[in-house]
Length: 249
Ligand SMILES: [Zn+2]
Image 1 (tube, protein in one colour):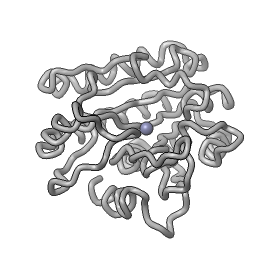
Image 2 (image 1 turned 30 degrees about the vertical axis):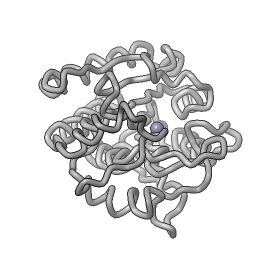
Image 3 (image 1 turned 180 degrees about the vertical axis):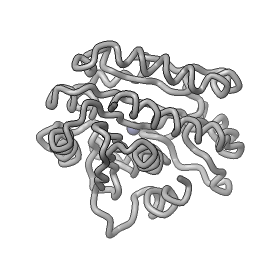
């Protein structure tokens, strides 16, 4: 996972390889799609925002382990798939086409939040709107991750929450838009850095996740980044792959 991140996504100041397409699609057999729209930096309202680092690598590995398809942002292209309207967003339009093409029943949209976030993983279903095609699957996913990651959550003193601060309530989020446009279940996962970043990038810390780290967040981030927990991240990847298989089978 680290090699994929360092070779494809965090290169070029988190903008991806200059000759990469803006986003990449990998097709699998399982009718589930894993998405990482913030795998590289984005542009929102005229401001460049830091990437949710390791979400691109995580999506590709989850897809490989589960047999799901994946779509990942691969190069900065001055847009933000989790903010721009569906009509103006090639990423979401391509994802919608992929949903129809492979008969997907669910989309898992991966994002990152700082180590200082109150929860290890925040699941968002727009308060149930995005899972109308599969009612209750958001609560199931929350219980599933809590069980699968029980030991890590206890050690870090954090939990998995549902529809708390990051709930994908905005109509232009990937989760809300794809559920609305395609009539499938979509879930957003905001994963904090200790549960997402498996390596110490030799003291290098990205400038933030979606927004730059605040002075309160930065010290916590530095400690987390210098003390990675690769076994925890591996289990997060495995749990997401198991969740994808459970939803797709
Ligand atoms: Zn994000």
